Structure formats: structure tokens, C-alpha cells
Length: 207
Ligand code: URA
Image (cartoon, rainbow, N blue to C red; front, side, top):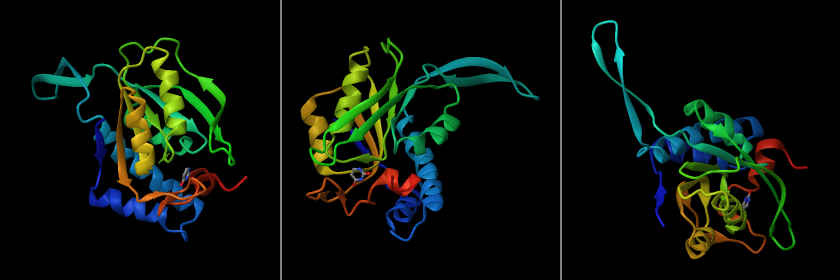
């Protein structure tokens, strides 16, 4: 499985803002949005282009557009904070939604929303979830996508735990991961260490 760690200095700096327990929700959301731009930029580096002739004010030349715009799939709740920025960078993309809550005892994902196109054959999909922790939510989401014919899925995650990366590898799903850091481990509560805490709570407040 291809795992790309974006270790650009600007990405590291925004991630540090998100990690810092003193960062308030507004600053956390701003840093997540900026980091999302960098991750999407990197994830689409090899996107196929279609050529079309264009006229500048000076001459005729070749223009380019994304040949096959991806489907963006934020995983609610925490992935919502990445959705607008991803869409800003790829305005021609369509957006689907998956809602998963984590059962705090079993740590298993419990689905409550699934809003996706029926047919994803030949469509690249970018799944937006800040945290790849146990990998349970990501595996569940990618299985939903693969069930609709997707074969080209990229998980865009601010942070990943080695356990989550391993789980995705073992699942043998057609996915690659773009992240800013693979942290040390998961703790006994399923939090990434050192991590940044509960991403949804940091974005929107604890409920
Ligand atoms: N989900 C989070 O929001 N944070 C973690 O550390 C793990 C899962």
C-alpha cells in the first residue's frame, strides 16, 4: 500500500498548531483547513489531465483541466472540517457523506449516514478523515465505496497510527494514504499518541 507522508515545513507547522492542547477550536479549524489544502494538493499530484486549446490575451496555447474529478467523501463528524477546503481546491468535485460514530467501549464504527452515488466505477475517491486510528472507520468507509465499484481510493488523514495503516494494509483494499505524520501508537482508549486528542471535539467542542 502506498503511504505518502507530507513533511513539508508548512504542513509540520500547521500540524503542530493542531497538536497543541492550548489551541482553541477556531484556530484548530483554521489549521486543519490549511493542512487539508496541502494534503489534497499532494494527493492529486498525479491526477490525469485533459488538454483543451485556450486563447490567452496574447496567443493560442494548450490549457488543462482535471480529466476525471474525484468524489470527495468526508467522514462525519471530524471529516466535515476538511470538506470545504477540499471542495475549494477541486470545485468540480462531487461530494458524498458517510457518518460514523465510534462506540467508546468496543471502539467499533457505528454507521448513521451513508449518502453516496450508486455507481463509483472509474471514479477516483478522496476520503477525508483527520484521524486514521484503529482503521475501523476507514475500512468500513472504503468497503462502502468498493461495494459501489470504486477501485481508486485515497485516504486523506492529518494523522495516522501505525495500527491503522497496518489494518488498511491487511484489509487488502484499493487504497493509498496521504498523511502528515505516522505517530507512535494507539493508547488503551484508542487515541493516537502523541496525536491531537479527539479531532471532532477539538473542531466543534465536546458533545
Ligand atoms: N479519533 C480521534 O479523533 N482522535 C484519536 O486520537 C483517535 C481517533
